Length: 169
Image (cartoon, rainbow, N blue to C red; front, side, top):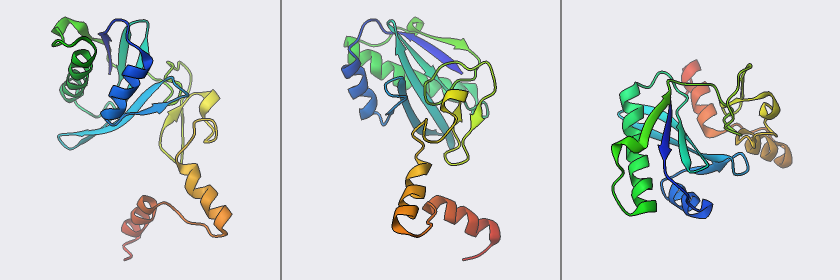
């Protein structure tokens, strides 16, 4: 789902500081921010993009019910609006823009062609950012460390998944 909030002019550093306090990390060399949140047992990826006085909240996962996505976005948007303006956000300031659209998880630009899914991190990327080196893939760090250390080590989560799948202990 895509939500748009009319925020008005705000400094990038103020917006960045607020979102980092909320657990967001910067993506795409300043293209926006991303957070992995949890609500009622659902894992929710939230991407935030700011341009020309508007904040866009991009939620790519169609399996999360719309009302849960909206609740998460309303909570973040309300806190952000109050942080910037010092008053409660009027409900009309936040609108659903689209049910969903495909976008690159790195540059946050809409993608009309095929998205590429990264085998290391699971993100979806445009043709320009499809390679792990191009989207600063967190999965590269363990591969690099393995080669530098002379041993191949997989991330803990992946090892656990393999053990569970094969029934080993």
